[in-house]
Amino acid sequence: MAMKRGLPERTQMRHDAHFVDELTRRSGRHIGTMLPLGVVEPNAEQPRTQLGNIEELAASIREKGVLEPILVRLIAPNRYQIISGERRYRAATIAGLDEIPAIELDVDDKEQLEIALIENIQRKDLTPFEEAEGFLALQQKFGYTHEKISQVIGKSRTTITETLTINDIPDRIRAMCREAGISNKSVLVQVARAGDEASMETVVRAFAAGELTREDLRKQTASKPEPKKAGRPKNFVFEVKDKALPFSLNMSFRKPNVEKSEVIDALRTLLQRLEAE
Image (tube, rainbow, N blue to C red):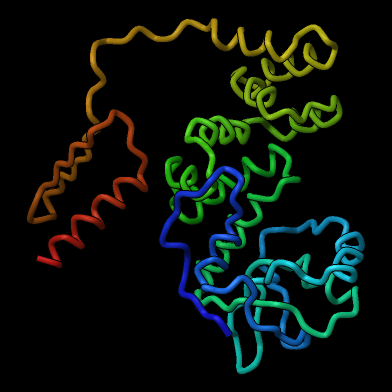
């Protein structure tokens, strides 16, 4: 069994690369050990709830076999839980296979969910809403910054930031978008940028009626007056001034906007350097 620890050391990936490809590449082998299907079980907590057309995949597996190993972790003696690859596992079961190629990773519960979530985001059949929710989950559950999501997923930071704005669309407006057949990401970004719910509804109705095109929406957003710049943006400063503490802290970052997770990362880096000295 080829066993590797944790997430990839190199997080920068090509736009068309797959996270599982990166993980399996570290094993040094294209195919891992063959595991009996009877010792493998799905993960009830995995983020993917819709598995799609399993029968079609099963037919392909009957003809060509399982071409990409699943990722698993050991949870008991001779008992493995799927990290990534539940569709292949279920399709292999339907196809009547007795075993499946697998690579074992030594990961904890948090890392398992992280890998599964990233693998789920990189599916080609995700809707913009599902992709936006996946990015948000990486932010909230694992403290990912926009930059880190960009590195791991292999898309530009601008794309990540724009996609995240789709989460601002309320459920009622999302339902309207689905009914109107609006599924293009760039259009949904413009809907989200409309502002309040009433404005979003106006944009959706106009687009659905053919009164607005994608180019019209883009121009409307581009034509909005931007706030006047008051000189060079000031650096973000993180301060801790608490009389209960025997110290005060003042950290200046070389950019105007910093997320909470970035402050935490900076403090951790500083502690690591101090401990190493």
